[in-house]
Length: 154
Image 1: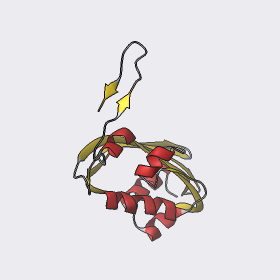
Image 2: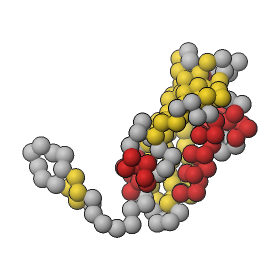
Image 3: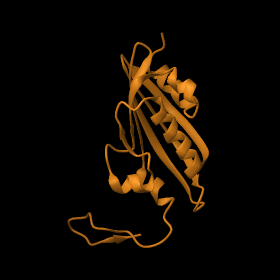
Image 4: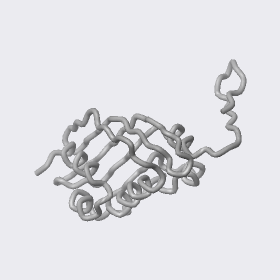
């Protein structure tokens, strides 16, 4: 039987191949992409959010859509490890948005829960401010975060 980190690594080797992913996850796997539930981010990247008990199709659809929205320049896992049923992977990727042609490089982190050699929970995180900005076509973003300062505009 494969370890949790081996299962996680195998999923990410061919995440757009449904039969491959199906062989590594439970039929009712929960997939969390970037956040639990953020309507604004979901409107930019429709796969974002929690896909509870959605099955392997939810994982594959996300990675297929990522391939439609961006050209994957690189996807570089840098560390993967696990303990018991838990696994994590950290790395970096570079994407170019297919519409705006903007290049973005961001770290990523993936968390998985595996039982009996099959993943039943998968969570993928990245710098979603950076990746969503690769789609920005105009306008201005105004932020006010510093309690002692003013606004920041992009």
